[in-house]
Length: 328
Image (cartoon, rainbow, N blue to C red; front, side, top):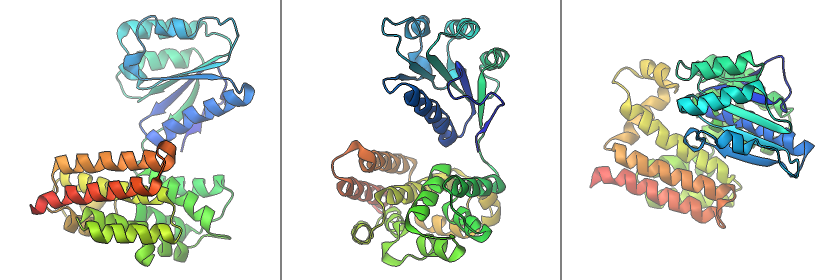
């Protein structure tokens, strides 16, 4: 979980989000943007990658405005900034502009450490966003997600969710949100089991399993049944993403016993065995194609398209085709 420093004001002149956990980095940015827009609904947000912030760009973005508008400037992968741009940022840290919040996202490694040290020395607000590699950390994350939503879940339910979903924090957070939305009262292991280890034809994971196995017709049938019975489209894209990523992870891992691979990849041993059966013949190119299809579907179901159902159907067909290449 992101842990804030003592200076816990999202509107501090400078925030540094340090780590490599994408979900936590995105949440750190969102927290600042939400606070800024609460103070001024017309806040201008500039979200830049390191290559977009060239020497002189920061000065332009932070120069005084005739309209005195509030602005948030986000710089992603700040560790990759050029030497000249780092000089600009360090100079800015000494005299930040009013009504402007600078957010630097930094991986936290040795690269670009000088910029990170300078930001800390200048008193920047810091949000830790570490990669969660230990099962215990992911379990604590799930518990905190339930608490943040004001709901109770038994320890067994939290463990079952981590065992079923795996190491992807976005998917874990999405699963918690879905359970809280659908279930009243305390969420227990039986509830998690119904959703993620045995929701019959309506399971989003049934859709994913059939798709990565190359069984397009069955995957489409399961998809339509899932949607008809109220499964949220975002849960289906989450399951598709998990299925394809699992194949990618296992195909690039060294051989070994399921228990060893489970520790290395953050999957339960039973899932290692299932993915091994599903991945036979998958190629790296096929995984890339499938991941792009999932990304497009995810954008489609989150407002980027007019028809979430069609976006999901396209993704299912694309994934099944990528899987069938192995059988050609």
